[in-house]
Image (tube, rainbow, N blue to C red; front, side, top):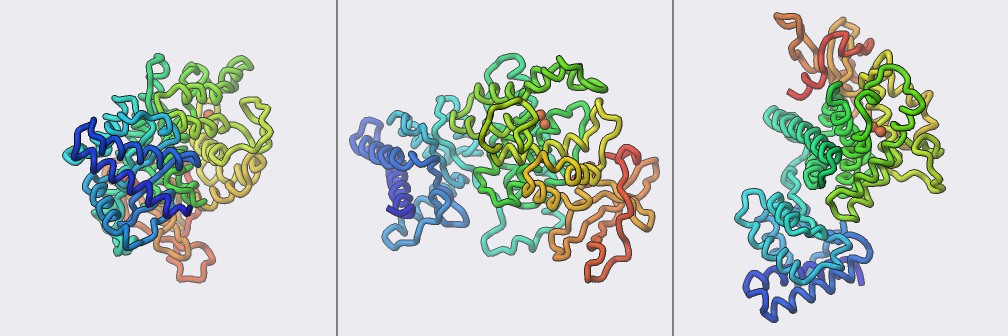
Length: 481
Ligand SMILES: [Fe+2]
Ligand SMILES: [Fe+2]
């Protein structure tokens, strides 16, 4: 049978189950029949992996494929869309352990879905209720905010109110991300149970932001915080990994998982003392041994998280592999005979870049973004997957967002990233003007075209990069306000 017909069968059985349970008591035979039918079709199909029904631009997608339009199922599709849209849900995902779920749990789920209509935030409420009942085999998917289908996505890209709104959302997600990673780490360090619902929700938010405005995510990922290094580093790694994932065409679901991997990749550092983490100079052999254990410890913590086993198995490998090189050297020492996974290869590139460009006590000088890229491209390239490294270097551009630059005119600026509307991939630079005190204020935004591009140039170009500390600024602060 084709996916379309499978999908139709599941959608029909699911809708009928919810509808029937909405009308009758739990012990009614009709309820029993409807639940049994849905359970049977879900169990049959979930053998091939997660079962996902999603609404995207007014159409129903089953396992990523759009359900074909058929006159017989027109009313069913309409009812399903209406049901989910009223609850601001984009769909629902069943994990493989739905096979072991009990019929009473399906009734509970259906009553929750029916009851979520009156909640202020139905997705969040459903998450909390399911968690409280210990149900991990199902996951409501939040509605994805996007422009209306007929709207040109680029039309309002530079609309000032939208830009401000996006920046606010981005800043909030970043701060919440740092907070969520901190909370999980703290819980683990005191051996209390930790879950990742919040982290997953934030990863979903970040997927939306990455799809909407990649340059803004590059700006966010240029945030540096010495005191909270491990947490900001984790969010930066998550953001840039997701941007890379988007470039290579990963699905929403995989982008979310990659984001979670990024946020949790250094979870194993909770066991490492601050003295070792912030030690100036080289680590002693016994200290290095402790450091080398963090990828493996991280996996242990991930596997103990209060989350569906399947999700944990998907997010554990990347963090385990993030210090392994493509030839399987690096750490932890492993007897792997297979290649490093895609997530591991992405994390290793992004992790190296963020670490090189962050202030670390053991290094005399922090590299500028363009220096780090050049080092990775010319000297460290053997460590990485060559194609992914190319994608990364291309994505970051010659002057990554957040670089502080001096122009040929003597002006100072902060790179905002590539111009989203420019075919010649011009770089946008926010000029910095001296303010009344000793600082700077935001000036005009310039769009510098590529040198030698066969287009009119502005007569201005980037002469050199500077260290933000030399100028006394935190570049992200100018880009995100
Ligand atoms: Fe690490
Ligand atoms: Fe790291």
